[in-house]
Length: 64
Image 1 (cartoon, helix red, strand yellow):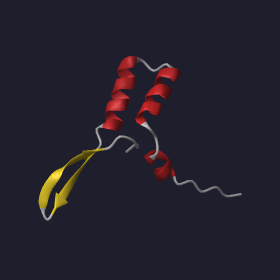
Image 2 (tube, rainbow, N blue to C red):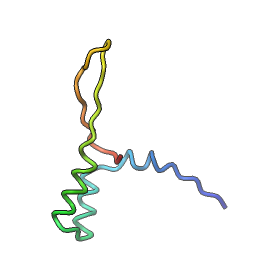
Image 3 (cartoon, one colour):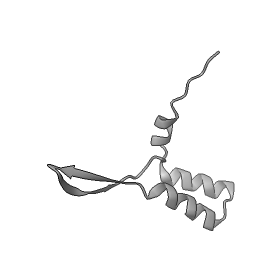
Image 4 (cartoon, rainbow, N blue to C red):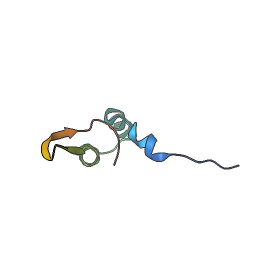
């Protein structure tokens, strides 16, 4: 039997509040929980509109 998983799609759907809840439930120290959440939540995207910077968008879920 072969099983193929598309992990990139699964990670794109992880809500950061859910991740925080799991880390608290497992018992991660506050310092480590904050460090992990900071690392995954600093994702941002920049746009160009007709060659001009159009601003920055912040992601609210997904892991990179």
